[in-house]
Every structure is written in C-alpha cells, then in structure tokens.
Image (cartoon, rainbow, N blue to C red; front, top):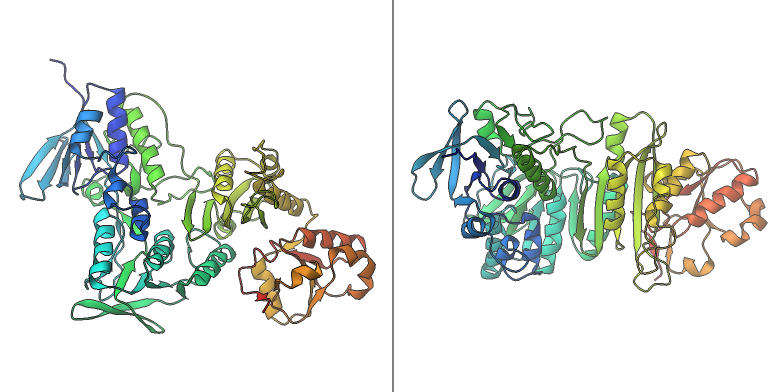
Length: 568
C-alpha cells in the first residue's frame, strides 16, 4: 500500500482552512487533518463589529458559506475532503519524531498526531493591558464570535448604556460606530495624540476624528488608561492619567500579538518582537513545518524595508494558505510580501492606506515629498457624487510612489486598490498618472481622483506647485506669524463656511489679476478655496506677477481637519 502524505494543520480560522482546502484539490490522496482549539472554524472575525451594530441578525453568519451552509467539521469532511477536529489544543511539537501532542479541552485527554508536513496557523490573541480591572464583568475583547454574541446579549439583558473603548485602531473606531448605533454613549480613549496611529498620518486621522465627533463619539486623546474600576464585580468607570470616565461596558482594542508560543517551544526561529519567521514559501526554520496567518511576521514588498512586519489581516492569511498548499504540492508560487494595505468604513467615511505613511517614509528615505488633494469621486453634477481626500507620499529622487492614504464619503476603496497595485509594482508618480482607468460619470470624473492627486504631487516634484499641509498651515496661523490668508472663493461660498482666522483676505480668483496691488510681496501668502484647485491657480497667478512667497493650503476646506466657522 502506497504511503499517503500526512499533513497536520494547527488552527482552523483562515490560513488553516485555506491551506487544507487548496492542498486537497491539488493532492486528492493526501491525508489532511486540521485541529482547532475553539468550537467554531473558518469564521470572519472582521465581520463581528457589524453583527454588534445589527447589520445582520445571527453571529453564525460570519462562519457560513454565501448560501448559508455552516463551516463545520462535517462540511469540511464531506465537501472539502479533509478531517477537522475541534476543541483540540496543540500543546507540543516533537520535531525529531514528527509528532504533535494535543489535548482534548472537553475531556482533558491527550493524544499524538504524526505528520510529514506540519502547518502552524495558530493566529493571534488580544493584548491584555497590564492594568487593574481587566477581569471585571463587562470587559470585552472582539476577536471571536462568542465575544460579539455575549456583548449583544448583555447589552440587552443588563441595559448597558455607557461604553468606553480602550484603543483607537481599526477595531476601536469600527466598534465605536457599532455601539453608538446600538444606542450607547461611546468614549474612545487613546494614549497617542491621534486615532488610528499605526495606519494614518496625523492630518488624515484628525479628519476622521472630526467626523467621529460630529457623529457623537467622544474622543479622549493623549490620555493613558491607568485602571478599570468596578462595583460589585462589574465595570463602573475607567480611570486615566487625567480623569475618570463613567462606564458600564469596556471594550479593549489595543492590538493583538501572534500566537507563537508553540513554535518557540519547538525551537523554531521567531522574531524577537513576536511572530514566527518564514521564508517566501511560508516555511519556518524547519523545512517540514510551515506557518501562515496572524502567527507570523511578513516581509514587505518594498525592498527598502528590511525589518519584518506584523500586520494581521484575513486577506494575507488566505494568501499564505494558498502558498503553503502549493509548495507542499510541488508548485512554486512564493509570497512576495505585503504593502501594508488596510481599509475600513466608519459611519459615512471610508478610510484606509496602502504603502508607507509619511512618518514611516521619512525614517527610510532622505528625500520625501507629499501632497494632499481633495475633490469629488465623480462629476459634481452626479447626485451621488461625494468627496474624497487623498494623501500621497513619494521619493523625490526616484519619483516612486511610496504610500497613499484616502479618507472620504466617496469611493475611496477603489482608489486605494489601484494605488496598492501601483506601489506593489514599483510605479513612479508619472506612471500613476498614465494608468488607463475607467471613466463614466457614475463612476469617476474624466481625470480620476487618484490621477489628479498624482498630478498635484507631480507638480510639486517639478517645482510648479508650492503646497503646504493643513497641519502646517494651522501651526503657522496659530503661531501669530504675519501671514496673508487668501480666500479665492466666490462671495456665495463665504456664506457656507469660512477659515477660522480673523485676518483672512477675500479676493475671488476671477478678480485676482485686477487686485494684485492689494497684496504684499514681503509676506507669505497662503491661498485656498474649497479644495484648493483655485488656491493653486492663485499661486501660479501671483508667481507670474512677481510674488515669490506664495503657497496654497493643500486640500482646501474639504481636507481641513480642524473646526471651521459655519453660517449661523
């Protein structure tokens, strides 16, 4: 009897099921077993905030096929052809004998699983801050369907009304919306001076924060949580280094760490900061042991970044699963790395980024240039047209696009996906402009927002545009510098919103050439309009007239992340 290849997979959420399903299609005779310590397998944890919000009625839907069939052991055995065992926790790997020791979490019994090839898809776990009160009732994390289901049940059963979210990453801002829509008062506490500190630059994050506040979320920034206080075993408040905030529900969302303990104990090479080290084929330091998903660190597609990156995403986990299955089956299809793409929706805003933020880029490159553009996602005459703000980061010397961030009510995800492709293939800003993107009024203007943003950046690289970021403009305004703030909008536009500055000079763009004598040449002039397209035009007009101290505020009022004066 011919020996069948024995493949054991530890972990059954994303990477595990993908590698098992793909491998069974490639090698039908392989003996594949997947073990999972939880009760559920193959679920989409990213969908949990939407269940809490009430977007769909049953939490089990995050673990179903599109036609409503539950991903369970029987499904994988009958449809996919491999064995799945739940409530089994791997507790040790004997690499010499090629055996995994596992414990049945229901009975306590232990058993051995031999393997020829082993796949570690052990995922990640929420970081538990080392502060008092984490064991109180009504403290939640959001990583498993049980978390979401129990939170919804207890909100209704106990009548919970005041939520404090610790951490303002993706899960924090998504859950802020979910809980607010459930009728709770929501406060988000973040130790840094901005939300989404790992994903967006300050001005883009502040733009999102402005929207959250307008929707009713209370943001508490630059405050460190010291403890979670309780009464009779339940949460009653959250104490920071500056205040005490009432709460009867606390969600902890300060990040996750890779589950690499099993690998470390087996002597596999792991990153000092956490995460299993893998090569391009997802092999560990033991060629017969593979790893993928949230338990590993990734290399970056950008060759300038030498350090490994821990960026847990379901999309990456599924790519790892396919690479692992292919390599075991003898197909060479390496995983070439990540570009750091992430996107989410909060209220009516889409926000995300791909590639490097400006802060990250400045640590790697000596010659960074950035540009911020704002405008509609389709022609202004289309009723469904909505604004987007795009920030681009590039290298001045190579002109390569290094990073893109997008925030707005319009279709930002489409632009991020195109930007991710451009960065992945090493495109320059000049090349981005020439990508043949689809055009029709229901989808985009004749010049797509991504291309227009690239044109702004190109004009800066070529010395035509002299833009200044909203953050820098506000800093200079607040410092008391003797500036001229030049508003080139029409008189009608002034009735809607104004720049919050007492000494704004208003000269509509159409009248600017006839009123040059009203502006000084010995002061810096900061021009702007709604999106600063006219602000840039004003800069060029004034430059041509001999004014050499002129800048435009990038993105105009649409990209202004701070408060504006409005009519009434």
